Length: 156
Ligand code: CO
Image 1: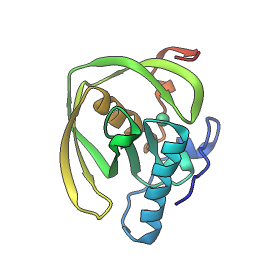
Image 2: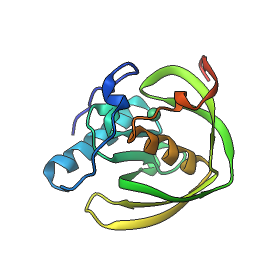
Image 3: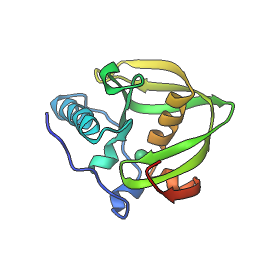
Image 4: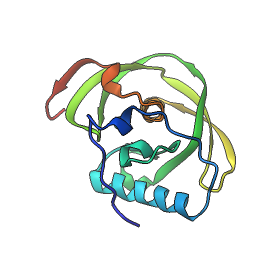
């Protein structure tokens, strides 16, 4: 378990497309544990592997209102359907101190592998749907600031 350094806006790695995870061995398990530790330490809601400089299709998101509720781990995720619209505030650990509103679907269905490599399908809505879309974008080199309106610097 270790805290990894979070890559900030301006680093090319944030703009690259991540590769599929094919090996669910020790190195991947370590990466996932480190991502969760790093997310806890940063007091964030979600973190994608490219944000710690690793171009693999993995992201983690808090399960509930707080970090005590645990974390979802999504590997090789695919958003297979979406519906509705939400327009909520987003921030990003790689773009510190900024906030903006982004239009996202209110509901998504996602297919993904867990850390053992087993496939699941899950429906999400509201905050979780927003977070999934934000983190999934990171895997394709897209940042929320590309989509945000009213981007601003403030304490939220
Ligand atoms: Co982000």
